[in-house]
Amino acid sequence: MRVAVLAAALAGTAVIGGGTLLAVRRALHAVLWELCVLEYRAQFWVRACIFELIAGVAFAATIGATLSRDAGSAVLAITAVIRWEIAGAVVGITVLGLVVWRESRITR
Image (cartoon, rainbow, N blue to C red; front, side, top):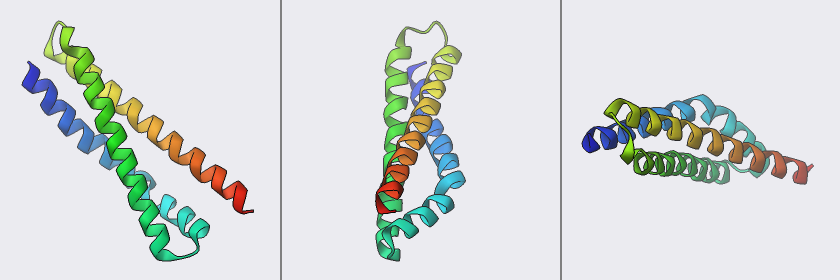
């Protein structure tokens, strides 16, 4: 059961993190390019945001995997891991949104 939960955590991190990034990458790059003015600076911050989001989802997956050790079945444990991963993605997007919103208010 433990191997199945860890495999689900790994796969879920790739799917949920990658899907979230596909949804927000272009808009994030456009906003950061406007804030940073130069393309290479915007690219740096986009990469930093990608790292933050994937690391947050992976960290949430490890929390979910650790807390689901006492689950009665593998399905319940995998469901808990996926729930934590989605929460990690939502928190990551919220943090990115708040940082970009704050910086856009400062530069105006």
